[in-house]
Image 1: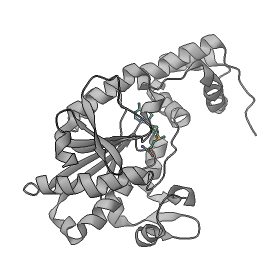
Image 2: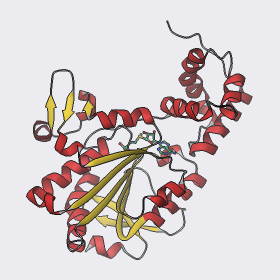
Image 3: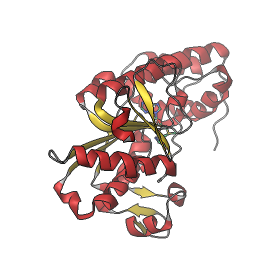
Length: 288
Ligand SMILES: C[S@@+](CC[C@H](N)C(=O)[O-])C[C@H]1O[C@@H](n2cnc3c(N)ncnc32)[C@H](O)[C@@H]1O
């Protein structure tokens, strides 16, 4: 039975939006009050909490606070994604960035890729497929680390299952589906050889310390999440990526997102298919 709508007052919205922002950097403008209200109404019903004042109190103290934050992020985040999302960027990755890194890391044979805010894992798995088909038998000689992180545990659970609906592969070329998925009529199961190439971990992009612990990455993908942040949070995240990216590494953000007015840490690398970002002063390496 659908839960009866629980109304959120403007004051409750302001408090809740601040709590969410302080924790995650996700910015809910006033116009999105109805989204918060509708996404959390069911949760209040499940908790048998009468109104948003009680829910805010629960988030502000008490032994279940951490768990409730997790539940809340599972519900309020938008996890839209798909395999092989945005061709042009993926082509830049496979035909420009990857060959450059394979050449410059030929001695260490170590490559580290971070898919930050990866939702259900479609993006890091796509990168794994691209690396798999590019390297072929040479893959065995390389130590390739691909990490997918997200704030939503629910999304990560799907990622770790490796099982997807047809919606997830809607932008995937048929030959890739045939080669890397097993279709069982109900779902598309990703081949274990690709699943093994990617690890997943919960990570909040606000958590700079946790990002530091992961060390330096050769490539960072963080697509279609900056749009949910305000300028202060965007700056914070871009600064963190700058700290965690190798000097000659590449950063990909959503194709309609831009790093501008965010200091001069990154520059666009113009390429025939579009662009990616490199640390300022290092664009020549990728554009060459
Ligand atoms: C629209 S999806 C993008 C998925 C994928 N990067 C893509 O472009 O297809 C945005 C993801 O950002 C995650 N997210 C939002 N705020 C976050 C934060 N503070 N830390 C980590 N992940 C966050 C959401 O849970 C969601 O899965």
